[in-house]
Image 1: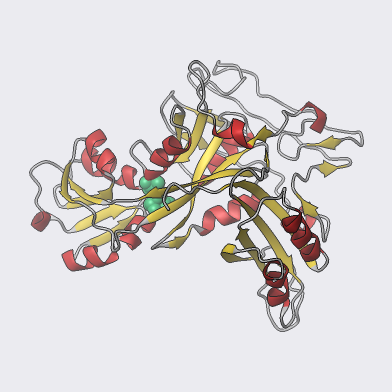
Image 2: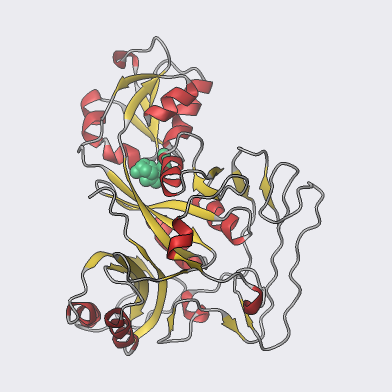
Length: 390
Ligand SMILES: O=C(O)C(=O)C[C@]1(C(=O)O)C=C[C@@H](O)C=C1
């Protein structure tokens, strides 16, 4: 199994997945609240990671022939971290909410993974979250998750929803598949530009490349211009591609930062359909933060329910009864699970964000109540709200 980082600022791409990926149902005992839910008992967890000469994995060797790290089979009954297989008592202590937001000091810059290439909005979000960080590009969302799990980076900053385009479903699914913790959120105002190579005019354009979310956010403008849309992995990658191939009939929807980096002209600014175009990103870490009550906190959970009338109503009532405000609900299909009802093959996972800290007795009571009838429940993180956009 190989994780490769090609060069200091090049893209992380994880070529193979960590093998054991149990479905939610076999990862979690039923009706269990897990803030940090390690595997208990006998497990064979193997983690292999290798980093090449420029990679600089956190705490790892920087030699392309560095031996792969192999965590041996675990045969006793201690508690182990599901990701690394390391006994829990050897793992670092959780970060406090003040520690996580402290800017990294010189010489020990935090490495923060994001999806995309330089100039992507996700890079700006990583820099907003950690102003002094070393932002590390990853080719896919999954690679960013794995980069954190394998200690190649310290954090990942990934988009979860946009005020115009809606949820980034892939990241909801990955949150459950991986064992990272949400330690913060960042809201970023996204202002799209139409970019083209020097000398190209709007009338010359036939096609436009960008991330599907960015294309969706500029739907009206692109329709007016009559441009054929082509989806690519990220906005800045689109700009880079158009610039490198010196295309004259193709533009890109990307940031003004991408225009500067790839030497392109800005043909139009603020082309998103609504000036209030905000993307919310999650900050992910290997360890949770200790929830506080010193400032506004949000908690993200995921649960599933028995099938039946009023099941979701009853679940949401545990928050309403306690005056806890919900800020987001998202449902995703519950995969690899035989359907529990006879007449439908649709079972769901519900992702809910609510405005309370897990340090609040009220929030703890709500989850205890939900646990009484949820078939699965996991706390993804309890973290300070990003109020900078309000
Ligand atoms: O392509 C980028 O620049 C990204 O950072 C990705 C992304 C997304 O996935 O939503 C982030 C913010 C914008 O909403 C558009 C695209």
